[in-house]
Length: 319
Image 1 (tube, rainbow, N blue to C red):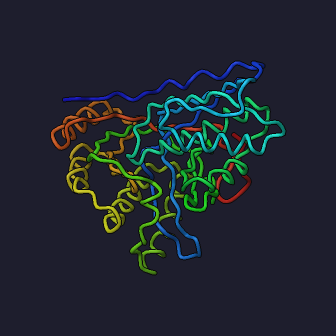
Image 2: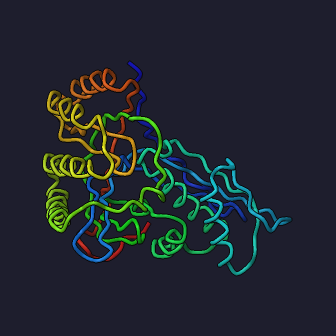
């Protein structure tokens, strides 16, 4: 059984006061707890499921250059964002942008969003310009639909228009035993697909969002799992996952909370409560069953945010 363990350590914070050098980090997600369309105009939304997988970006100014170079070279979206930030800066600057990530690409794990948010923070620090969430959102909207990974919390986020809907709060850590059905999905192409959801579906998503917000507020992981599973099932009409029913059976067999998916990706995972005395047994059993289903298995751990102060649609929280 091939089992990839979670990557937990948070990258070290950047050194302070280093002229012309900036660093930034951003976490990934395991798909979404919920994703769909609400009855309102521009109602496409998602609810994030942050996990301990990270992107770290560094930007080092080069006084002899006006151009920006990115490493690795395929991180073209990060390069574009760096240039947008520099174009708005008081003085022109060139330099080297380096993006390092342990988040698999094209799987629905917010790899591109994490690259962009980490880049914004790194370039902003290097240039000594503020990069509040509102500014990052405005810039990211010029590049692609984006996940809500710039907020240290579980959030409801309008990913197509790149704006925060609500800070929902934090949950106790969960384990996620995940599989990958293979292939990759381009975020921009996926969001061009017409949504086949009816008016009834849109109202159902609104009710699910209310249920999920209440579950996060009360830290009800069982209800969180039920909402995540329902969202995965409703998403089958948009991006079908052949492994969803087998994963639901595995979840039931091991006593899991529910199944979360990358709605625009290729991943599926069984959610488990890490506080459960039987957690070690359950995660081992789930990993064994998942390996028989799909081969490679990765175990993730969700992030908790003990300093999250706001819930509902109140003020934005700082990063």
